[in-house]
Image (cartoon, rainbow over all chains, first blue to last red; front, side, top):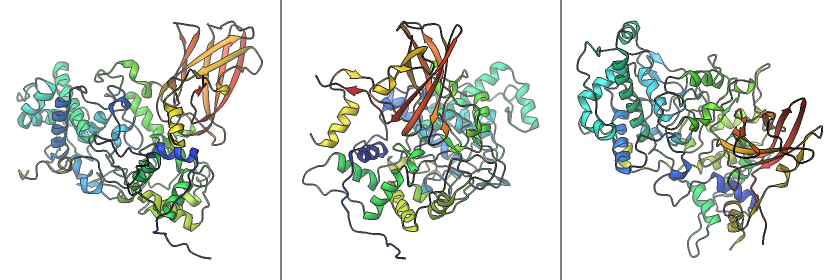
Length: 424
Length: 141
């Protein structure tokens, strides 16, 4: 049997109208300098900070969040920041199946933050419904930052007063350790929880609102991290808007074959879940990948989201209650939620190994082989059926996936650690 | 204008009064008690976004049915999965219609909606089949 070698020459294919429409839905616009989507695509209040209409304040909020993201003081031992696991050089992942912090190992693989602001749900199981509330959980998680919210309020008071007040208004004085114990929080250790319970409701509210604003600032920074167009996008753009007398971007025959397999309902079937410019429908699907721990995914995730202290229906949400459609009309039960995990983006996927919710697969080739023969274990819910493609077809899909690499569409300074010069 | 631009113009910029795609209108329920019509906002149905649809129900004579209890479910028959959300039907108090909140579709292809209508002692079920992508048709004047 002949093994087809990847074809490096440029290739012209006559796309049908229907195929071209589908390609247009997968494309990042190459003329959009400010980011992936314009503001009309983001419903007001969703993943936006307080002052969404004030660009100057928005810039300051993101700058503050940039510092919080890299600040190791926002942790119990002073050594952990968001960037410990979400490393800019690895597209805000850490390249490991699971992350190890001190003596703790995370239960799931660290996902990227690039492009994540477009999702309605956060974490692999979607247990948070806003970007800012997602940022808060690792801060108080014993296995991650292992800090508590009173401690963080004090850090903000000591090191960020002016920057905080420029964005969020008056910051209370947290120096009184009788009112605000050194360590206290609802998910702290036993002593910290007791200290939290002994605080007055008003003081707890003061602390929590600063904690919420730390999350909002981090979310404003993360919203700047969007995937940039790749060769695929430039190619599709040239098909839709041919510019005379310019060199037309091209893809190889294998890359084009890979696109056709990817969007084919009979062959790759990838478009079912990997659709839209981020190549994810942001939904929860069960791919039945073998897992090392019992993990029910979305089934437990939606239960947590509905009870979450910071969800859309809580007092911390600043948009009107009737805009909480995702939470109000979420699917809450049924077999489809079992072992279902959030579909990740395929943007920059070639550079964000390993793959799946426990990082089970090291390479894209392993992922493709899995999909090719996938079948759920007996009695287990799963949505895949084996693709049964030829080896060269799997290579062609992988070749297409690599055309989605475009890096991160943001000014370079946002990818740097703002504390490096100061040696913190 | 090349043919690619024409496709997008049709989908994004209506040139005339948009008409409802045929398979979303004049649906008779299974036992014949009700006629229904659904409609979506905007020109086309986006993927992966929560949206609110409209539902109109009349009896077999054409008289609007305004006090029914209605529930809705949906899915993709060939994929054997349901909708990614749990839509709810409420009465639209401003006219003879209902609003379906929480409609969401996570992929292209053949979708089926099952609408269960109960008015007094009469219960019936309507099935609507359509294929995404879908847009309002445009009649050339």
